[in-house]
Amino acid sequence: VIKNISYFFDDMFKIEDDKIELKQALDKLTDKERAVIVLRYFEEMSLNDVAYILGENLSTVKSRIYRALEKLKEYMIVK
Image (tube, rainbow, N blue to C red; front, side):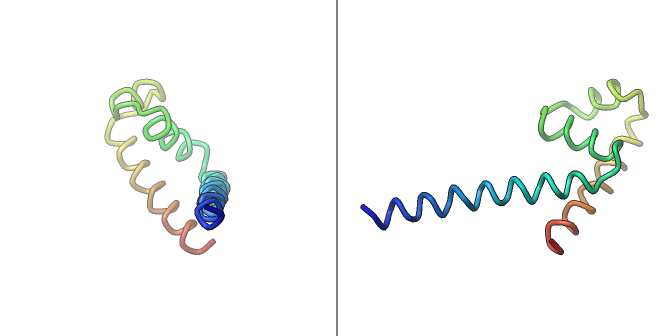
């Protein structure tokens, strides 16, 4: 039982560390990049809704999401 509890806490702390790492990576994005990521993936909005809310063209939103995700990948790998 003790061993299982230990794994539980290890997993819990890893999740918290990952959240902190993601928050730090998001903070490195520009405001516009962060906005599209938050709306699309955290608020689970459609691309059309994100474009409408931000007053941007759909293709602009798609490009911005692509670039922001590439940056996030880089930030999360480099640490």
